[in-house]
Length: 243
Image (cartoon, rainbow, N blue to C red; front, side, top):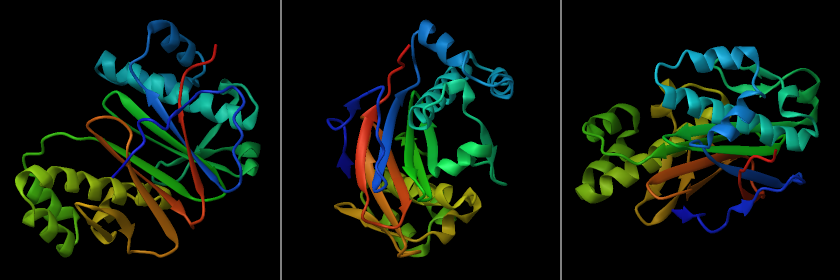
């Protein structure tokens, strides 16, 4: 597992995305009220309505922070204001740029867990990212048997208890990242084959036309990004709002 803790560059107002690059953005979702108000002002009426449907204030605030940050990030590549970003959605809900913005070729994906979010951005390559907060899972083996292939399940079950959790979340994030990139749903988890060991990086066996990179964006988190093709370079940014 790659640790990217020391590789996150500070936010720049002038971000250049080269054709062979993938940019990862790390977003803190627990932000000061002043920053939250600024981000909320960039959301559409539909997004604000969605935020207000959350029962708990904490979840509502984190949704606003995540969605507002996504708008701010995309606006930097598109050279427009955050509130001018328009979204369309695939049948299973994956967001895409809408209307004339889609002609930019900019593709992205967002994932969040607890108080952290990750956004992956690139040009023309399908992309997906998944982030999970590592936590105790009481029915871990049952979930692995349900959603993993037999060989994957056997590996999880064969490990000492202190290693099972980490490998479970590694499998999960890799599968989810790939399915988010393709636009398929979680019901396809057991059809995605991943090869990994406690000491070796994951490799997607389902298709040779994709690359997967695992990493640790912060303590107690696992993440993976899936990108169509190979030969791309990774650059990591720490998001901060520029007023």
